[in-house]
Image 1 (spheres, rainbow, N blue to C red):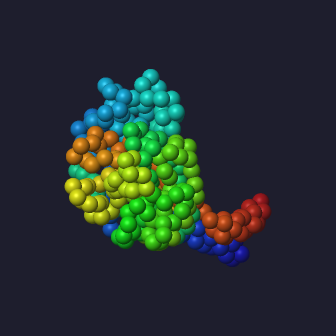
Image 2: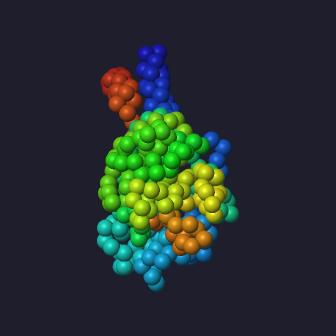
Image 3: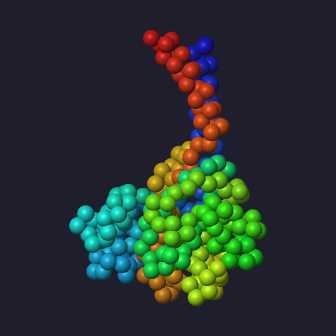
Amino acid sequence: MKRFVLFALVAGLGLAVGTAQALTLQPNVATWQSWGVGDLNENGTPYWDGNSDDYNPEPANIGYWLTKTGAFAPIGSAPAAVKNASPGAAYPYLGNADGTAITDVYFQSTTPNWAALKIEIAGLSAWNYFGIYKQGDLPANLNELLTTPPGTIGSSGKSMLLFKGTDGPGASLTFVSPWADFGFYLATEDSANPGNVLRAFFSESSLNSGTELNKQHFAFFQAKSGAYPAYYIGTEDKPLGGSDKDYNDLVVYVQAIPDASTWMLFLSGVPALALLRRKKA
């Protein structure tokens, strides 16, 4: 009986840890789609498989980077640092079964998350800003998306910058969303008018303006599932009508991490596990 009680205690602790709201995809969204190197031909299907202008004539969209192929292969022409940052895996992507994008994507989280800027392959890298915003509720003044330093919440309380392009690959930070539901944004500063947004795109693409309304500028890949999921997020920083649709302009890795209280809850089950082992011995 004691053994059963201890087992139930440890199982309960594991369940409590595993069910924390940790960077989960919004409810009722389409499933993750599998793909492989054989699906890469720069024909726009999946939607992020564009004909990249980078490292021509070698292919270089985000799919090639993820799988260490094309320009990112060991003998490819991409810089070593860019190639070394690749995970070398064809992680499932978020999209429809026909390869098209899901237009409105947001996440839910009430726990800490760790983010790292992996690569930037864009002429606008020095002017790009990446962050999160309150789901379905943008700041009235989009210049707020440029608020620095990273980790800072904008004055309206509806946005938080995670990275500016000049932070460069390797930059990382831990953040907790001020809102249970949030999306990701990519804003480009106007080089001719610093401090002002030239254009901005949102993972809920119904919030995009002009020609980019309902056009998805983010590609999401699921690197880990379970209690603490992780995602690679690729972005396209130009209007899709005039871009190469390679989604490698700024790539970020985001993973949920346990907060201190969760770790304490988990560790409190360790003595019980040790006792179970002694009983079996």
